[in-house]
Image (cartoon, rainbow, N blue to C red; front, side):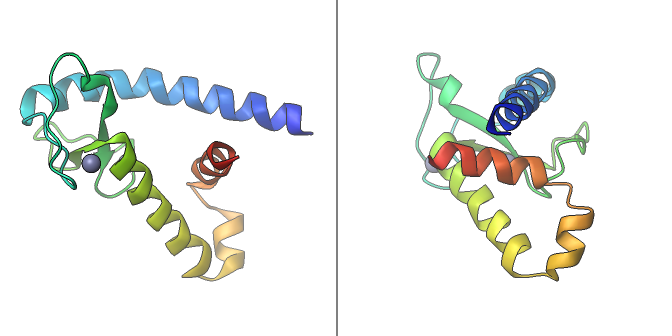
Length: 115
Ligand SMILES: [Zn+2]
Ligand SMILES: [Zn+2]
């Protein structure tokens, strides 16, 4: 059971990394290398810790003008998603969330990370 979950999480991560690569490069060209929350600055030595956040939390929404992207350091990015997960977990009808929750994978990824 937990083996399966590990595999699922691993493959979700691999998918995410693959998909992220395309828009990440574009976002890094478009925006200054500064975290949008804590204003930490990045350069070539640590830019891997700067991640692309989707403002509407939809990773498939990648408009060419970059309006759905925000550069966040890994810490602020985690925070941002934690808040969002709590919102959809506690802020809405549970049934609706469990039947078609596009962020179910995300939540399991976050839970996994906390262990
Ligand atoms: Zn930050
Ligand atoms: Zn994000």
